[in-house]
Amino acid sequence: MALQSIRLLLWLLALWRNAALEQSYTEYATLLRAHLMNGLDAAVPPKSVRTVDYSQAGTEVRMSIRFFKVQGVSASEGQMRLKVWVRMTWSDLRLAWDPAAFGNVTETTFRAVGSSDLEGTEIWVPDIQLYNSNEGNQATLEGANPIAYNDGTVFWSRPGILDTMCRFTGLVAFPFDRLKCAMEWGGWSLSDGLQGINLTDVGYVFLTNEDTAGASYQEYGIRSVDVSLKQTFYDALPNQPWTIVKYTVELERATFYYGTLILFPTILITYLSFGVFFMSHEVGERLSFGITLLLVVEVMRTSVAAFVPICGELLWIDLFMLVNSIFCCLSLLETMLVLFFAFHTDEHLLPDWLAWLAPWLFCGSEAERRALKVVE
Image 1 (cartoon, one colour):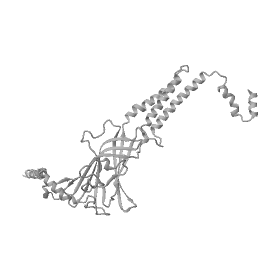
Image 2 (cartoon, one colour; image 1 turned 30 degrees about the vertical axis):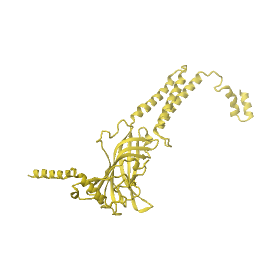
Image 3 (cartoon, one colour; image 1 turned 60 degrees about the horizontal axis):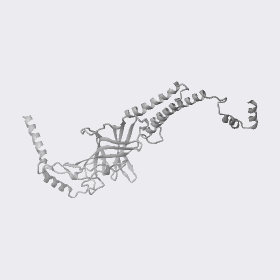
Image 4 (cartoon, helix red, strand yellow; image 1 turned 180 degrees about the vertical axis):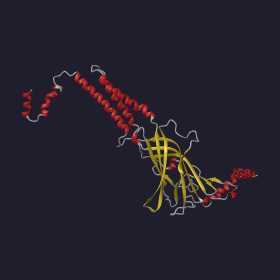
């Protein structure tokens, strides 16, 4: 008996929820939107139930970012581009209604472009910007319609690109580095007095429901994300805090490419340059062999320079290429000395003109030069 009652209750609940999907939905949704838009000012922050001490006006905005894919990273330009979905949820009691009065319609949508575009935006939307963006959010995030629910909750999800100017850390270990880039989000014209900022759960999510999500055959992938909140005060509004949400994205590089095409060949060429130690001085190609290997190392060093920025810090890859160049130069220097002593036939080690000029350079007085001539 109890089981039948539960089944009947679930059936009635499903019937009530599906009532909004009948043909009358269009008429009720039109009446509902007209009712909610009557006298609504999209420029004025909403009213809600807040629990903070410094303000009872405005609303609390909970944000979350769904990371979809790494579109591109330029370490030399300090830039990172991510394909994301930026999601925000807040409460606006001006948009609450009784579903029974509108054909059991429990949700509706509104047009919204951004907080600065009041003509294209029907309701109030949060004024939360990415501070260190290369382009503004309104230019990189696509337009999407917020969904309002009958209890006044509004959900706004926008897909787009986050073009971030990064102050990278961890690049010193290139190509075994793990780059970190911080993204700082916060209110631009509204402080926490009218627009509080919090996180939805941990503030981010990774989903692979779509076949195109995630990384494949890419140099970079997202290894981890760390989210933190802090409050700061500005001189213009010293009594109102401003919340800044900091997303620290750690990127992991695909090192196999650099290991097989740069590091291993460079080490192999350096070891091959030691082959001149086992060659006879009578081998005529000994000198050209060392010069060729040195040029190859320098060409690879130039190729690596295209992947890293020009900076004042000494990177691991710079030190690696420098050490290999030094070893190749030492091998070439040893070859030059061996060939010099092997084929030198003059009485002096120095050339004749340098032997004649040496007394004038190293013997300062005329008496010293005469004494040197007497000894000779």
